[in-house]
Length: 474
Figure (spheres, rainbow, N blue to C red):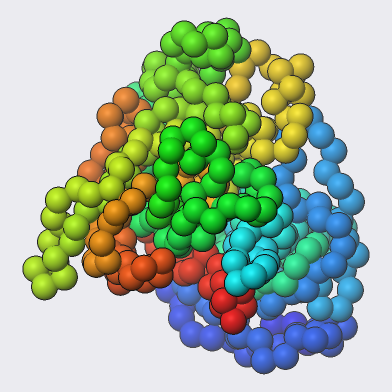
């Protein structure tokens, strides 16, 4: 039988803790053995969530869970059968003025490794994709909106009391997931409080997945004939770089407001013509009013195929004294990187949830999106919603520090978001993060990670790459 998760008005203000037994519907438990128990993390009137640790689901159908622009139809959902789906009951009896936010996130597994002649290289995109929705008496009442990558959020607006079912389906691949359920205010209060601007709070997460592997097979072509340490053909051809310490750049927004930017097509045309074209930041106030502020210059990245905000993130490698635990002198080739950001995944399932607004159509992650976007709009836009992060994987063009001639040793790789202070934020004291690395030849080991960001737990601490890396190296 099912063991339901219950949100009740009687529980408001009461903190609960403990675990519920791991019971499954026999019809949905094919291949699902030894699964973790439900976890009851607490519930109070401020919306502290219930957290459920889900099963490992297996999907083989064509995916409909990857985000698509709102002007394109969503592909059909796979059928729920056997080990590809799980149903989590939810019994609701909440006050009339309360709504329920449901968030889910799955492990990130979006790289496929191949080996040839002892050389490992990336080829293609094999992302695991999940879809989640809510049923009431067998009828769908909420399609939880997914981000482009690893999560989704939906709001049940002032739900009627009764039994609901949250259904999660793996459309492609094998992965585990987390569900988070919050109580939220359903009706905003009306008072005479002056409106306040809801600013983003951009945070840097430690650079991850440092490697000297080559990023071949994605944006940089095929692996034939290239033997440079970590550098793609475009990076060597354009910048004459020969030894590239690659890493994943991870950034988030934990502020009360969206990080929302727009690039008018007229500004984009100026950038393409070699003139200065600029992005603008859209700042929204609590009463819905908006104002715009000019921020960083626009740059079209030929390899990525979309516009960036220039100098959005700065990276630098430093020597590092292990005994003193102190940063030393800068080494290597420090860089300022452009980004085109989206809602990729949820930073903290225990923090307030917001539905994803930035799906990547302005970043043209799928061929033709920019052209289609220009038919419907007069500008590009990108950003990150509150409590969402984006990741630029290590294999994406430009994600490296050039380290030719660097001796083996211990170093600190530092990432700073908004280094020039052009973006308006609620807090700029948490914009730096770093990883301490040991480099020995072409092997890189992460010794520690440091961050100023106030981040909660993430369901997949290694961001899903460890298992695939072990398989490739084994």
